Image (cartoon, rainbow, N blue to C red; front, top):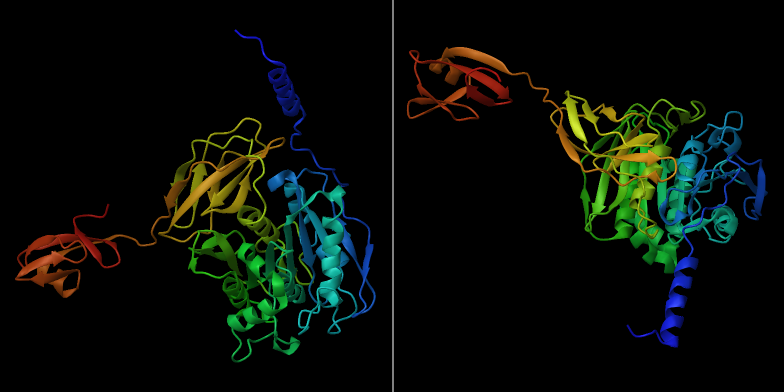
Length: 488
């Protein structure tokens, strides 16, 4: 073996030194894990006063891509405040974002609307000429920049999101339109779209369409219009909301699909625990870009889910929108580069253990060190389970669903998803049997005559001559479908 030359030795030493000194993904600075006291941020020269509010800096490490924190700007509605409703300073419940912040290691911003816009402490969503440098848009973008540019928070600028209720929902849409370069995802709750006035919150003006709103958004976005290609959006509203027109919900998301461009495919409606029904839309690449959630029986309110407030336009009796929204943003973000592969162990042995007309029961092999499991239906998270089994309820009879599960490890975070299984809920149709002559079957439309022979409708099985001398038992196994013999 020839001895190594000096250059060869130098290269090998350098290689191993570089290998040894390559930094691993560093932990980010933990926060206090409590809502801050009231902060004073930017001055609003248009509406008057200073932007005040609160922020939540979790003690947990981020579980989102890149090992960096996501930032969520949460906007209250008219007649609400950040302290009394978004965070509820007396209980830290409010809109119920704290639990999500802890789960994902995300930072939450909860500002108060400056001034007294529309005489009800609203956000100025109906401003026909918003500016990135002044007014509500200006102070909110300044607030986001204060946190993103401060390295101690370790915020990924590609994981900045905004959500809000009512005037906050309208302002969410304004921000998503005027600053698509800042907000990777938006969540609109009962938000009137751009170009509508405060007098039009209860109805869609004649001639106003998603195209109207999209044209306004493009004009506001200006040179940042290309950023719509990597933004995602969603909307939620209650079927008993008689304050803001329910038709604005699907109109809002249709607006963003126009802005995103290309063709979209409407996915199957998915039930969300708490009375919600979600309709996803995917682009030509199969990426989910918008969602529309209708919440049965909910009035004009923020759907906080169990653990949140249940007063003053906050509803704890229906879906948990923060849980759905954060999962939607993280799973479908088109900007955040992939972080390290999940290091937990994906559960194995996922199987369907039973079905009814409205439920699917699942089981899987337990994973060592798992503290809980997440259950996904048709690609969207539906719930968590402390054990290796789960029963999904509120489903539609005779419908097929696809499921996967992940495990949550206290050190490794959430694992990759398991292999999927499909389950079909039982049909609501009850099989019945009728025994009579072939002639009577034909007369009752259980069978039909062809050339003097009776054939069972649906299965087209031959029953013999169509007369009163031949008899058969027909079982109706589904609407309009008969087979010779008894019910299965």
